[in-house]
Image (tube, rainbow, N blue to C red):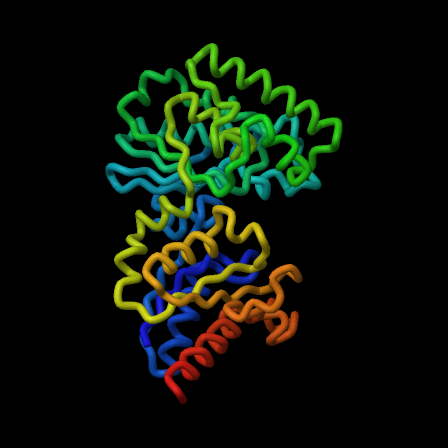
Length: 331
């Protein structure tokens, strides 16, 4: 049996690469074969699965302090993960973040530097942000729109939120109080008007424009294309080709819930597998009660207990896959 491992990260316990390698080890332990293809959906971890950082730059952090951000450039294409420059963790998490002041300037500085060193194609992954500035900080840092006219800007999104809904949907996650959420919402409404006046682009009803607190919409005003991150990553990594000849795909993430099928890795790669009739096994740290009873999903917490599932995630994944492959082989 040949198994394709296409998981997301298990946040806080294992990277996508670690989980994918564990799946392959499990398949081989049971006499099968495996291909590791760690995935991401435009959120945190996208840079890692697309080759990892090979450059580092000092840019403006989300709260104005300098931070060192890793990014990738292969001579033609640049990959930038906004969490590395404007991420919530850099702001100290929701507890220490300053939602009204958090800026995407550092992400814009990375885009500008990428273009200045010769990138003709720039992928911006926009998950994990501290910001709800509608991308204004980034656009100001990027400077004149003229320099981007011959550049393909692709924004990898893992949500389809409207621009002016970004404050209400994501603001509380970034530490915003109800009063601050309303202030941020009004600011986004004004920014949408400003972008239409300055660039002739109406971002209000543009799908995905609210990603990263509106950064996606700001970049769209400048001419960027907003795409589903999972599809972009799948195309970059050649998922369709990897699935050819496979007998099983294993995917997973730290917590499986209804949103796992809304632009996330699990739902995205499952759709690719379904298109070829390939069976899918989902391995998750925790499975939400609403999804309990799914025969194609295994909860590590239920199977191994909290302590082991959290402290030795990769070994737990390996054990589950080895058992499934052995059972399929009649062992």
